Length: 329
Image (cartoon, rainbow, N blue to C red; front, side, top):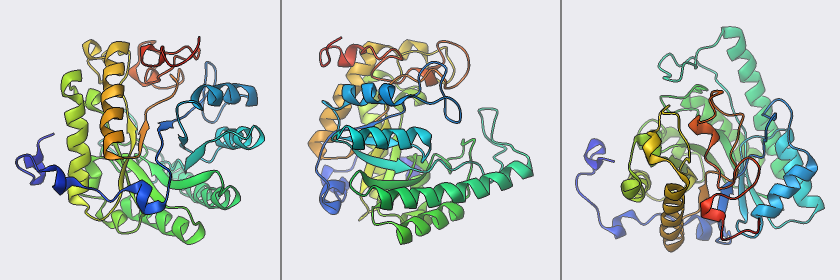
């Protein structure tokens, strides 16, 4: 990233980028974290969801390696995940989210979406309010499992197909903070944290950023520097507020839609994963790697659609190269 675009010309010293540490600030035990969505072939949000046994299989695969899981919505899938954790006494803590949907048209969305009928936007407003209330209710019901709360995901970035005005997200954050004890955040691409999300920064307890060098057409050998620049630019812009990474990953396939096919394979995924983990563990940065398993429901129907291929495990739960020496097949 070009720091000069945001007024940060030249490289700044490490000391200038020391962020308030999430683990120390909130008294949370340092450990590894990963984004989890368990949808398999024929399953998707709002439709068929993984069974109890399927989720248990997933969590037993993840348990030796990760303690913190990020869930995106207070839906049936999340409820089943919580059920498995409780009944099988698994050692996981959750960042629980509310997946808020479009309350405003985004005519500049490059993905071909982002525009809705007014009736649908009104329905979304009511649904979002219900999701936020459910987030509060579950946080209070499961305080021994839920350690942090997110009031949305990528709803304010300019390219969002589910655009929600910043002032509305601020309302949601205030409501959750008033109703639950866990620290509250909003998960978003790093760019809006440099400008439009200032009113939200004043309300939330910590900042959660997403950084994807491969979406920005970066080569694997410049990927970690790019991720680090993204993180440090947000820290510099928001002093005194803990900053964590809630999505960073590397795809393993692409049909050319948004990602150069020459940049993605399992070998490059392993390089990025290893480099990212080494840096974030050294700096004690809470980082949710994206993601645990490939999700066949995502994106277009093309088999090499990049949205389908971010997992450290394939859709059949077989490990990719990055995990091949760490799990028994």
